[in-house]
Length: 270
Image (cartoon, rainbow, N blue to C red; front, top):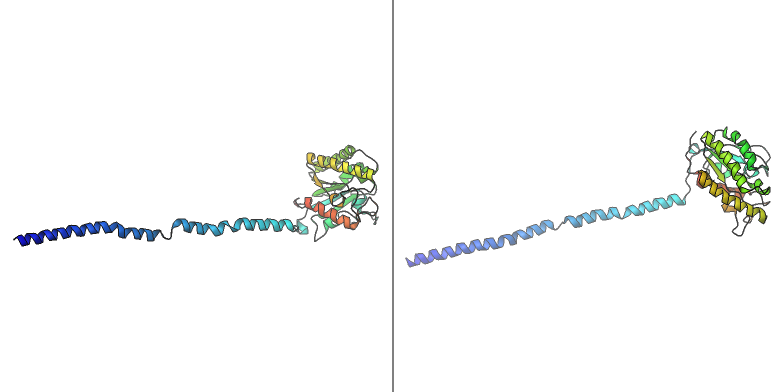
């Protein structure tokens, strides 16, 4: 009988010991399952997915901006605004060709209406040799009657020759702008080119300074066509004028390119 009691006690001890092992080993065996499930962790995977998307975006945006800035924008002729030009012999190009209204390579805007490089369509010109901005103010309605999308004015060279005060020139240009405003037509004004004569060149510099102030105050588009022609020491850069007054055809190309920078932003429309 004592044997049976001893065996029963031993069996009870074994049962208790087995349950204890099961309780102890349960969490140990389940923990690796959790860690295996977490191995393809959401955090690393998320970073890997974001990394290839985040890196190229700034690069591609920079590249597209750079390429568009480096190469001139080409506008098909049918999308270009119509420009009418108001001015003197520099506009007319009549230092070589005296035919009224005929655009030649001596006209400062010749390349501006070119099929490949140009940014405007030619709507006509009102220009004459030796005229002042006062004459242009009197002829502005003839230019506006041609129906431009933008009126481009290049004047002041003959005013400088006549030692007209810059503020009087600005007053004449204001009359031109007032007329253009009455038609709802934007106006662009060019800076005046340099001069060989130092006194006349000083007046050109003063007039251009006044033009910049006036254009900003009156919301007139300023086309700095004189900038690429000017020698930092004063007067014309060598080879860009044959008489100290008018640009050569090579200079006219530079003037047109400078003007294109401003005119390129004007939307077309008829």
